[in-house]
Length: 476
Ligand SMILES: Cc1cc2nc3c(=O)[nH]c(=O)nc-3n(C[C@H](O)[C@H](O)[C@H](O)COP(=O)(O)OP(=O)(O)OC[C@H]3O[C@@H](n4cnc5c(N)ncnc54)[C@H](O)[C@@H]3O)c2cc1C
Ligand SMILES: C=Cc1c2[nH]c(c1C)Cc1[nH]c(c(CCC(=O)O)c1C)Cc1[nH]c(c(C)c1CCC(=O)O)Cc1[nH]c(c(C)c1C=C)C2
Image (cartoon, rainbow, N blue to C red; front, side, top):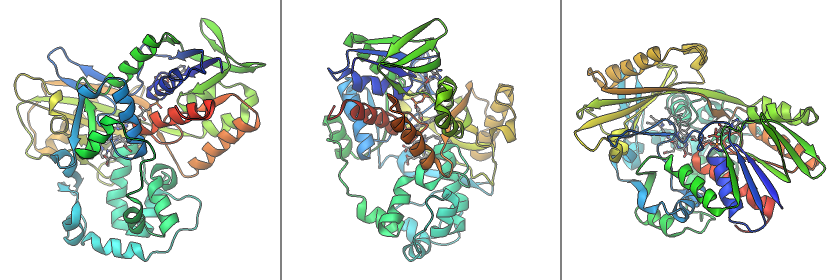
């Protein structure tokens, strides 16, 4: 393998480039990013007074093979001393809330959560679990998250818990999202054990499949639930970019939008506004729609599959208040769609990562997430929505849900257009057909990034690693 072109410089493209750079088999690596910065949705504002605000992901999970893999990379990049861990006993890990019928309710956890009745649920969750164990296995190839949870655990849990969870991870609608693609561990638990309860109990001790390095071992020893970095999560793409530049084998191009790609005798020709380059292999870390517009018409069945992949737009409103103004502590709260479709959730950032507060003087930082799958219906066209109306919606949520009457001392509204792929029912078939087409046509093309195999930062990094392993064969 001589020249590999990586399209898209989000965390997926950068991770793939990192793994490619580790291999002597690749002599030249070209990364093409359309915007003026690398990192994609990993985007942190560092204010001159030391405060940090996240406009995309804020916490990354250390658990499982994918979490362990990311920590190994973080360690290798020399970022271990910048890690901000949140342990599982921390208040942000133990306290998450839902806002139902005008009130915040702490979500049940642990054994007492099973045995006692926790409003807004009408009975102890043990009843739902008991029903679940004796519910027959579903027979369809895929199912919506709502239908799956309703069938196995009851309608109340589907309407409140599954609905909120889908909004808090996918900013999406649980009635359309696929359980098989969004929560594969739930789908597989039912397939393998006939029950989620049995599956989660019996399979939870499975080995991670990736050897944990020193940092990952520390995360296990100290029982981390999430982590971030001292100067925000954007530090991770910045460190990968620096590693690639230092390697001397990677050419990194910003402001380089890929317009068109065509297969050639020896690989690909890649067309940009101001030039053409050749590559033996392409790793596409572009959002599916962007790849779709770059593909030649000879790839019509691939274009068809990619065109059918949906995305959601999220407005992220960062607020800072003077003083310690919250009466509750925790990670944050979610709002089920039945309560207020346009308002997804509120993160209590200053509880989650107090290290990102301005060092001088007490402040409270909150992030309000709006829109998602309901963006168009509630706020209209994302291109024309007024920041002022999003800010008002966010501050009103803080006022009514958290009783905060103060005016924020600082705010920032970002409309993140098409930022989260929506894995609707049948998504797994679309991904399978896309990859089968590439194989049948012998195209030297890999598909990675959040459009296909998971939206978390960990999943996206792992998709980059898997593609490089498949391309080069063997361990990296
Ligand atoms: C608000 C929000 C909160 C989130 N919270 C979390 C969280 O708490 N934990 C977590 O694990 N994950 C979280 N995520 C998800 C995670 O951040 C994303 O799924 C992940 O960053 C996607 O990475 P990617 O590289 O696949 O895509 P992207 O970041 O979208 O990267 C794709 C890149 O391709 C570039 N591009 C597009 N078109 C072209 C073109 N024609 N030519 C060249 N380049 C192009 C884009 O500019 C972009 O840089 C969150 C996401 C959002 C939006
Ligand atoms: C309110 C909207 C959102 C909040 N976070 C996200 C959205 C759309 C995006 C997001 N959050 C998580 C992930 C990664 C999932 C993973 O597999 O690691 C993404 C893409 C993490 C997450 N956030 C919540 C849950 C239950 C999870 C899953 C992992 C975990 O258990 O930590 C809940 C949650 N998200 C938000 C809030 C306010 C909230 C709960 C109080 C914000």
